[in-house]
Image 1 (cartoon, rainbow, N blue to C red):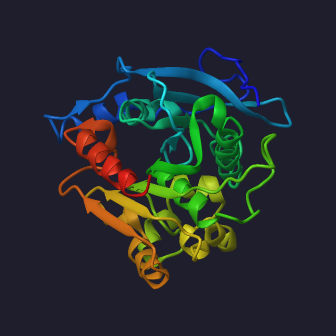
Image 2: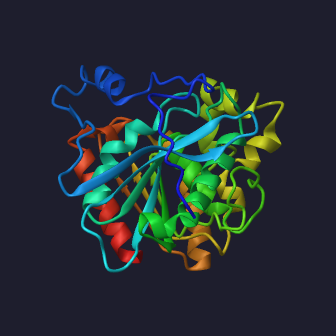
Length: 309
C-alpha cells in the first residue's frame, strides 16, 4: 500500500489544538523546584531518518490526522519492531512533538518509532482520540513493508494521558469498541506491549478520586457524576483480560498518576502476564521530558522492549 506523501506545515487548521503543554512549558514550570534539570529537545541522530507529518487518516469532515516516523538509516535485513508514541497533556493539550526526542532515540536503538497526533477534548471528546490511535496502529500495519515494520511486534508507548490511552489500546486488543476511523479496517489494531509512563489504569478506582473533580478528565469524558459509565468504559482496568500484553510502568513520585496500577498487576498475575514498575523518587510529573530522568526512562524502555521484541 502506498503511503500518503502529504506533508503540512504546523498543525492542521481543522483542529483547534491547545499546545500549551510542551517541553518548554514543562521546563519553565519545573525549573524553580528542580534547578538542575535540562530539557531534551528535538535533535535527529546521524543514524536516524525521518518522515514528518504523514497523513494516517482523513476524517469525515476532511480533517487529516498526522504522524511522524523515525527509523534507522541503515536498512535492516529483517523488519523492525515498532513503537507508537502517544503524548500527554490531560487529553486537552499537548502535541506529538513532545515525544519526538524519545522517538528519535528509540529509532537510534533500532526501532521504528511513530509519534502520532490525536483529537483532543476541545475538538472531539472521548472516544475520538482512542479511535484515532487505533487507526494509527492499523496504518502502521498497512504500511509495514514501506516502513520496515514487523507487524507482529508493535508496542504502545504513552506518557501521562497518553499512557492511559496506550494502556486502553492494549486492554481492548481484539475488541471492536473503538473501531470506525481510518481506511485500513482490514488490519488489526492490537498492540503486543505497553509502556505506561506515569499514566492511570482506571478512572473509577478509589485512587483516581482527584480525576473526578479535575478539569481535564471531566472535559474529555463529561461530568463524572453524570457519566460514570463512560468513565468506567475508558478505564483500561475494566477491560484487561487474558489478551493483555506485557506492560511496564515508569512513574513519578506522585501516586495519583498510577491509579489502578496495582489492581491491574494482580489481574495480570492471575493471567500469567509479565509486568514491571519503576519509580523515580522525588521526581515531578513530566519527568520524561527532562534530564536527569529522560535517559533512565529510555534505558528502562529499551530493556523492556528487548525482553519481548
